Each structure stands twice: as C-alpha cells, then as structure tokens.
Image 1 (cartoon, rainbow, N blue to C red):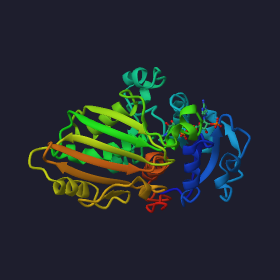
Image 2: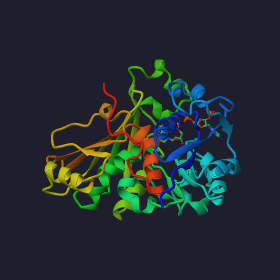
Image 3: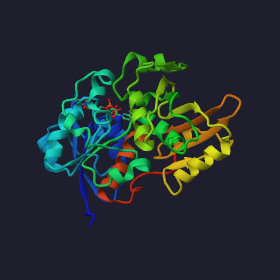
Image 4: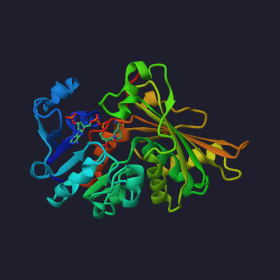
Length: 351
Ligand SMILES: NC(=O)c1ccc[n+]([C@@H]2O[C@H](COP(=O)([O-])OP(=O)(O)OC[C@H]3O[C@@H](n4cnc5c(N)ncnc54)[C@H](OP(=O)(O)O)[C@@H]3O)[C@@H](O)[C@H]2O)c1
C-alpha cells in the first residue's frame, strides 16, 4: 500500500541542492517536508536561506542542527545534500533507525578502496557501500525500488552514463578508451563562493579543472560497468563555463565498423522508449543545455564519424535537477512506489 504522506528531511537545506529539493518537493502530492537541516544557517528559515522560495507553504520552516536521531525521528526519507564526507558519517545512524537515505554526495557511489584516492578520506562506513543502489532510475530501477540507501549519481556521471550505456551494451561502441569532455555552469560548485567562482574570474572564461583526477572518473567507469557488465576505461576532462546551470558531456568512443548515426540514435531511442525524462534527438539535431534548464530531462544526441571510426555522444542535464535534486526525487518516487514522475518537470525554462 502506498502511504498517503511520507515525511521527508532535507539535510543541507540552505545549499543549492537543498533549495531545489525544497522547491520541487513542495509540489509533491505524497510527501511532507518535516525536517530541514543545515550548519551555518541554523535558526533561519527556508525563506531566509532561499528568498526565491518565500511563497511556498514551507517557507517558514526553521533550519535545525543535524543529528541522526532527531532526523530519523521526524522523517521516513532523508535527502542528504551535504558536502562529500558528511553523509558517510551520518547515514548509518539514520538507516539503523529505519529511515531511507538518498545521498546527493559521492559518499556511497564507489567501492571503499577508491575513497582515499578520489575523495581524500577513508570511508567510515564501508559496510553500507554494497547495500547502496546506484540511482540512475532509467538503468537500475529494479534495484532502486524498495532500497534503503540510494547513491544519487553525480551530474556529469548521469549525463555520460545515460548517453553511453546502451551503445556499449549493444556492442556498437567500445568501452576500452572512452574520452569524456564535460562542461558545467558555476552552480555545480555549490553556493560557497571561492575566488575561482566569482564573476570576475568566471565571466568570459572557459577553463578545465582537476584534469585527470576528477572524482566522477571512477564513477562513470563503475556506472557503465554496472549497466553493461563490461569494464570501461574513461579519461574525463571537466571545464567550468560562464553559465549558472547546465552540464554538457561530449563523449568519444571507438565505433564498431559499419555503425551509422541512425543505428546509434535508434539504439538510444529503443533503450529509453517510454522513459519520461530522456529525450533522444533525431539525427542532425544538436543538444542544448538551455532547453533542459529547470527540468528533469536529459537530452541525448549520437553521431557516427566513420572517417575517424568514432562515436560522439552528447548529453545535457540541468546539474541541479536531473543532475541532483530532481533525480533524487525520481529515486524516492521509485523507493516509495509513487509515480516516477511525481513533482518532476519535463518542460524547461526558456529562454
Ligand atoms: N551543485 C550541484 O550542481 C550538485 C550536483 C550534484 C551533486 N551535488 C552534491 O550535492 C551536495 C550538496 O551540493 P550543493 O551544491 O547544494 O552545496 P552547497 O550549496 O555548498 O550547500 C551545502 C549545504 O551543506 C551544509 N553544510 C556544509 N558543511 C556541512 C557540514 N560539515 N555539516 C552539515 N552541513 C553542512 C550547508 O549548510 P550552511 O550553508 O547552513 O552552512 C549547506 O546547506 C554535494 O555533495 C555536491 O557534490 C551538487
């Protein structure tokens, strides 16, 4: 039986991911926001942290200190939108008290051995890593339904994996030497300002960062292997671009002989037929991050270049919606048996 109102907590409610969770969950027919957790913003309200949410019924909810026991007392589902490392400490206490946890950070996306190298810490709760469902609903929906712990994927990883998995799975492209070029708007860095995210540093600037050590590299490899059963090798080069929202990944992979753009496109269309949040563009059409802004949609485009034997797959998501809060809600909808699309927009904001 589907419960009438599922109580939810948002940890990191004062941040960008937390604000998007509150904005979208406020319109969810089956949930009630019962707890908002933060750190420096404790004592303020949702509306003081996010003045653009002042019109919501939940605007006056007060941001509370985060304590696993108190959170689990208030909520059956916890959305954790905290910096890397925080959920790994907090989640076990909430899970043991019976709350489901959907974590937007990278804390439950990789095997324990990868954390020192890619995140810079020893994982404090490795026994939970195998129990976490990897939350790409279009690929792992069966494992997400009923899961206690969901590792919500990274924004770049969501885009790259959705674009490539069906093509590797069908043998149309090879998984051994994948190149992913990523671009992100500045909201991907969260609300904490640093010199490199100021207007002065970012306006008119396009620059790579963390090459070749970005933490989504092993996540893309692992996600592709989970989806296809084939090990993948990925070189990932992310860039910051002077936009607010939007992630675009352009992926290059070796194309099987004789495969055409129509074959690649047809495979993606078949893999995602009937999926509300995947839009596969017809041959010749080009992805645009602006079209998915504010929506939970990923746009995909695939091109075969027989001259170089390369498949090019381009994917765009709104980093804060399909790349974070929207996908987390899509996962909760599956965990709790709600309509997968509940509270999630398919139309973008344009222009
Ligand atoms: N931004 C994106 O596009 C995006 C996409 C996918 C995934 N993510 C992931 O989602 C998580 C949140 O990202 P964000 O962009 O929303 O970050 P953010 O805007 O910087 O917000 C971080 C939130 O966490 C709270 N916080 C910070 N340190 C804390 C601590 N030690 N203990 C408890 N609370 C703490 C902050 O509270 P106060 O402000 O009250 O101090 C704030 O509410 C990160 O793990 C990020 O990697 C982000």
